[in-house]
Amino acid sequence: MSPKTVHRLAPWVATALLLVVWEAGCRIFAVDEFILPTPSASLASLWEYRAAIWFNASFTLWLTLAGFAVAVAFGLVLGAVTGASTLAYAALYPMLIGFNSIPKVAIVPVLVVWFGSGEVPAVITAFLISFFPIAVNVATGLATLEPELRDVLRSLGARPIDILLKVGLPRAMPYFFASLKIAVTLAFVGTVISETMAGNRGIGYLMLSASSSFKVPLVFAGLIVVAIMGVGMYAIFAVVERRITGWAYRSGGGPG
Image (cartoon, rainbow, N blue to C red; front, side):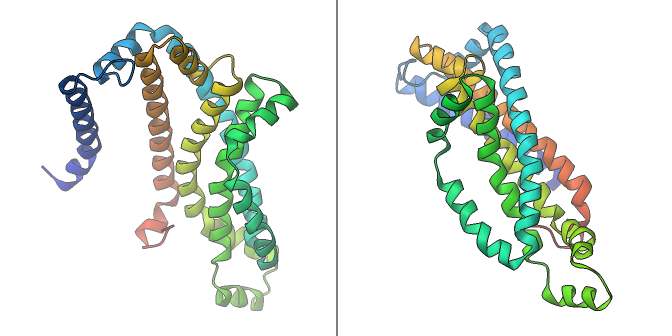
């Protein structure tokens, strides 16, 4: 078996081992289902309530992608503004750190007061929790542009806007696309948090309703669905990252 095949199979094998250990542990120690259901019970619940799960999962996915799309646009612009100038970087970066330190669960009640319960708080929460890695990575990619390169470009008559658009942003693209993989998973976290607190549909609302009825396997079925959606979106953006910024990795560059 080639090393490439081993690397492709490794995540599936690790996941299977986790499920086996989880199932065996629950059965050996006779853990009650309302405390920790087995994977088989969770998957059975996933099939039993598949219609409700599909309906709510599609709703969560739509809200997540909406908030994520706004986060991508806003994070790219904010990161470009922050990283284009050392003064802007010094002024805005501490504010970004401070805002990111605020638990987003504390913001949801405020959003409910402003916009009511439902879709809008979920989209905004997904946006608020996911734009930070995008903005920071773009700003880092621009801020690490070598001063010598800037000097050479200025000596050739390049304006600051030319340096930003033709050199800075292309150089920051590996950072940008790498951040998308993290940001999209965080967007799911924001959506589910809002749905559990102020939603009337979605996976978060479904899990909250299930927990209030002590249907813990259904709660874990919802968690599995969220994990699958997150991994799926991560994989999509990983492919996009490799296709668009593969040059950075082939040349030994790229973020990290």
